[in-house]
Length: 245
Image 1 (spheres, rainbow, N blue to C red):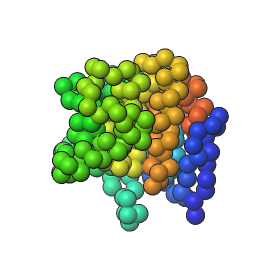
Image 2 (spheres, rainbow, N blue to C red; image 1 turned 90 degrees about the vertical axis):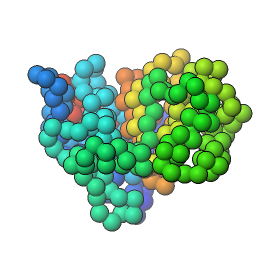
Image 3 (cartoon, rainbow, N blue to C red; image 1 turned 90 degrees about the horizontal axis):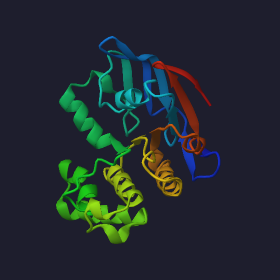
């Protein structure tokens, strides 16, 4: 059975299904002599938006990168429920090439600086993950234009990234993250480089994407206002998960 969940301080309601979508158990990650993550256990439900907070160097981005399969943990497991609900995939155990393919199919990413390709137009940036996954160009371009329209920048598909404002570029990044219909979107400080008004609009657009087909969202942020609009907050200190709400 699904339970409707409404984000604190407004935002769109999401649907959190029973069970979990992603689970990390006793994950550890070190870089040289530094323990970036220590016995970190984390669970994400379908349709849930979770904020990850903590001081600089606490392990926030490392946790996101391990959960998303960008980094392999040194210990522990990261498992993701399959889209058909039958079985799981052990993300941490996949070889590098298989993990890259898994990320392309199942996850979307939004970063603070967008990491968009400046030589491509907005629509081409959005269509790129679809083309890499084998989608026909016409279909990929049509989906890109549809997503840009949903995010309020439908007239900007032919513009290059340098001709867009910061908020518009981040909406392109969100559209790109959604292009493959991922089950989880990971966002690392997605509003950190934006003024407060623009950040509110971008965050609203990002939060509206969760709950669609059970899509979940994990947001690394230093901004308490961002965290307040998520369903739950996980806090890290010295690589350890301290508390949630």
